[in-house]
Image (cartoon, rainbow, N blue to C red; front, side, top):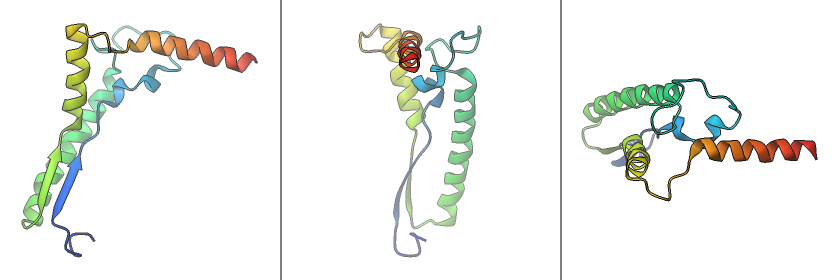
Length: 116
């Protein structure tokens, strides 16, 4: 393994808010009430990502005790990305993508392409 070969500096990052990826709504024409959070992200997928990240962080903490000579940096990508999404929506930034409108547009384009 890398540690046995002399590696001592490691960067481990968690998963981002997968429920905020536009592809998650691509095939969803009618989104049921409560399916999305206040930022247009799929709630259940983000709950799963948060649980994965919790377990990953617990494992990193344990790994630090197992290889004390290693510098293991844990990077919280989820918080960074979700923070950008929530702050952008809250502040009304023009650069935010309206997931619902984007997905409807993508689906409409796909429907047209399939008819060709």
